[in-house]
Image (cartoon, rainbow, N blue to C red):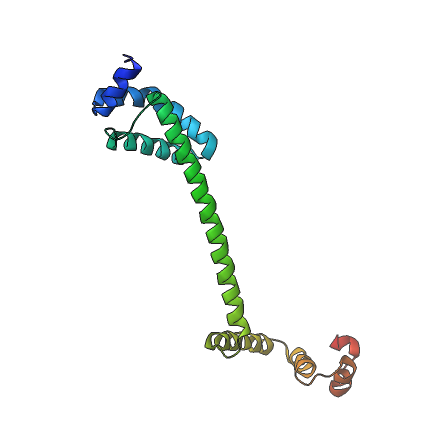
Length: 169
């Protein structure tokens, strides 16, 4: 049963369940699809429409509906969608800024050799390198140590170990 616009507005302002029920069943689905055009997420769209109906119910005696309940609901949902999009944009900007700040702080920690965390990382890295070096075959390990620790050239290493330069390479 469709009630006249004025009677429906009076019913809403008097918190008559039948008036809300009529509004809900006539417009809920359409409003969700309307909201989804803005948002692109059906669950969020449903939530925003549900919020619009909840606000209408909670503040029915305070809200002035000058046009029609349909126009009021569409405007309320549109505003909620725009607020949601604005909030999401602000949230993404804040998250990006926070991520950047964290990244910069991490870089500072890695650069600060007086920082105990840096020292710990450095020690762990040195242990891993030593582990890999010790796992090398004897001649490879010797070549590596002469190259990295004594800074000898391949020709000098070959002469010292009595092996060919190609083998050192």
